[in-house]
Image 1 (cartoon, rainbow, N blue to C red):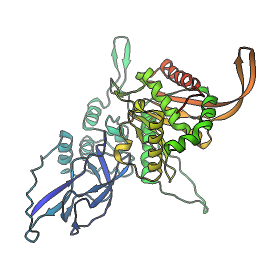
Image 2: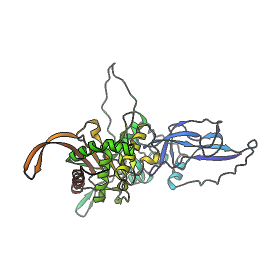
Image 3: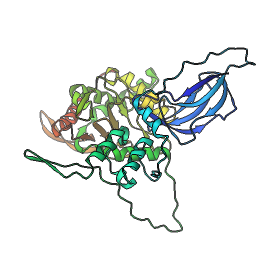
Image 4: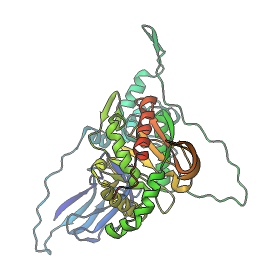
Length: 431
């Protein structure tokens, strides 16, 4: 009997691991090619892993809720056999390790550690826990170690650097004093009292992931905000005039979102240094403009599907893409690739009636734009005959950016350019 190793497939750009959420097949079940074997979840999206062969499931290597690295074998499927009539050759032997990190994890699994991290919101690899135990590092101390891995994870080098510099005094260098600055230790929440009418609601898995992602982002980036008010009267009047003809011709509902997303893409082209990420001391200038579009899910959580190469889309193309991603977001039908590769994010807080807000940066990006509600306001209108008071449609836009790499000048110029593009909209143009 030949055996096939079912591996955790690549889940999208930058995704290194996934959590087993549900096994849909049991040991002994007959498997057909493309049958869904297991459901997994990343911090981005849920997904299914299908079988690549026909056969029988003979071994499950990870239990539910286990965290598995991309490329690791998660199950064994027996293929071929005396009764099958088809000889299936043994797959090529798999390399023992796909990377040094995987090898270290496997080696660490042989060591049983006594550190209980079940109460922590962080994931610690067996290798990190083994080093911590050997060096006498408690869980509370481990929580304070600065992690440079994905989502703030503590890597082998992080824990070794911490051990090396543990207890060091500040070092004077020339005119400056350098300190070893550690990540603040986890603060215990104040005790909560409850009455008989209170109800305990368990956070959903996605809710926990979003919560951690937001906390990590604030701890990573010093957030600064700039605000600007934009007159969107021309766009409002133009949309009201053409929306019925647009839907009749294109079969798509025209909302304000694609108009603003197209303007954001144009703005990024004028200020490309907002379209970056920071990797240690290196700035990564992105070659593509991939706009994240925060969308509400049926359970109240948010997800951020991505419009790839947004600067290359016409208004019609942008509208079709926005509507498609929004529809599939609400139906929980997004694919892993739909939420990967974003370089800048836009969130429409105005859809909930908010006039402005201070959104948290979607790491590893360095900025996020929030669109406030469009409101009618009395405003001064400059005319050749003098200033007049009129009713105008106004929108406040807020821009949160990472002050490590985006200064106030760039952050402010960005939304000023966005304002200029919006206010220059021709109300007589076609679509």
